[in-house]
Image (tube, rainbow, N blue to C red; front, side, top):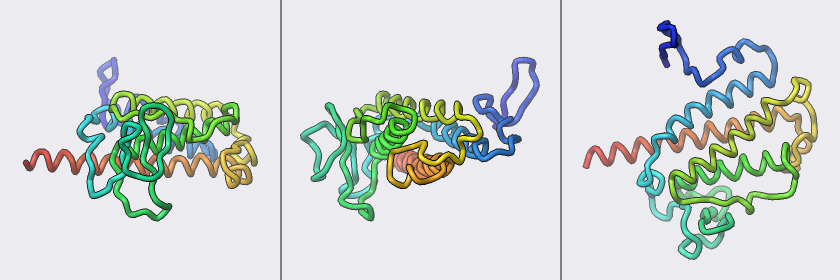
Length: 208
């Protein structure tokens, strides 16, 4: 990326990312840098997401976010008007809509924040989802932003603290930096899926 500063000089990289973190030789700096830059890439794409792209079903029986009572999956997640359809099992071959991927990332970051920096009360089944693009993206931004704020506020010695998060049994037994790396992988993995589905939808629309 290239941007022009206020003084007219040209600089490389996004001004929305603190590039100086890439010079810090600590474990937390590594995962913070990966998280920040990965979210910048995904966030830029989400800013252009349309309602049609959000809802597009890339294959039969795709997992969706729908109004309660209209779901076609036997299991759902979420409270309120909208629910995300839950896969039949961990190895389910069902394709996923962008709406589902956004909702999944939302509940992942929600639960990890709640049981790391929050009051340790609510689980992912307490998340309020939306099938409308503006609210869905805003919900994910909220969860990622507060997770990033929590991670950024930690002292360096917390990187290898065990039990800092109580979200899962594994989290409670692992040095904290492993959890940050895991959520980074979730963001990179599902963020890439969102981008590919967005590209495929746009290519099909242009072809038609």
